[in-house]
Length: 348
Image 1 (cartoon, helix red, strand yellow):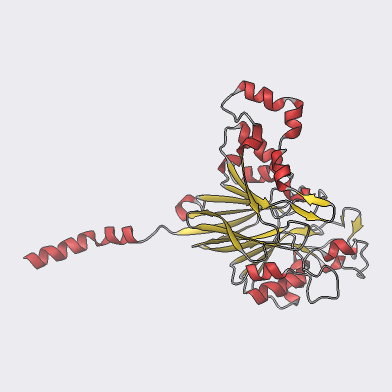
Image 2 (cartoon, helix red, strand yellow):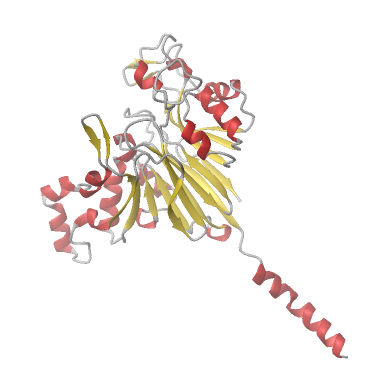
């Protein structure tokens, strides 16, 4: 009788024990919030940005939300995902070009206006090149300066003194990534999520990031190029990004098509071309690194565009197949996604 009762109790509580021991299924989602390459405005594309979200499947991966770069239109793209600036847990900037940062001004203004809390923002410590200094700290401290000078911040605070008295800059928790971060180092963590950073070659202070979670990993390469800035060289792609992307599930990277290469008939400036990574070289990098999904963003030129700013596309507009073919030509066998705004890759 005792044995039978014990067996009954085991059978009764076994499902509960199984549930207690099994963690909820998790997922990682990568969403391109903007794919426009560089300063031009083309076909309604938002400026460069990538949302990475991680969490329980039942919560649609929304436990931790990280925004990498904040080009113009980022807030509008987030709204299409039913997200607001207040939902973000952290922002990471790959570099201080306006096409990657100008959307942060409006995003922080809205977060302040609607009583959002402090926001972690990670980017480079002050980085000097020649007589120029790229200062993320200065950018963040003056994030709403035109609104301050115009009197709006004071007027809005008078309306509602629950808003931070210092305006949007009062919500910034600046995480300064050291310049010349030659090996990847963890700079931010939240639960099961860790973000590491490494310095890259593009402009002073440029960075690439890697997100690691139980559901998978994603690398954000930014606009990184090879440390040797001009040919002859083995590749236009970044050695730092390649090391960071080893066995990553997803690599999101800006891309320039070889149609704009010097000598191809394009008038695109050679120095600008040489500081980007080409579609073909990124394909080769992804194959060597064992990346499963290669996602092109910040496309130069934009899909179906006859020009990039004043520079005509030799032979006419390019489509997604043109970019994928360039990646395949270098031997990449994984999944290629040619970016459009709100393109999504989900891992679980």
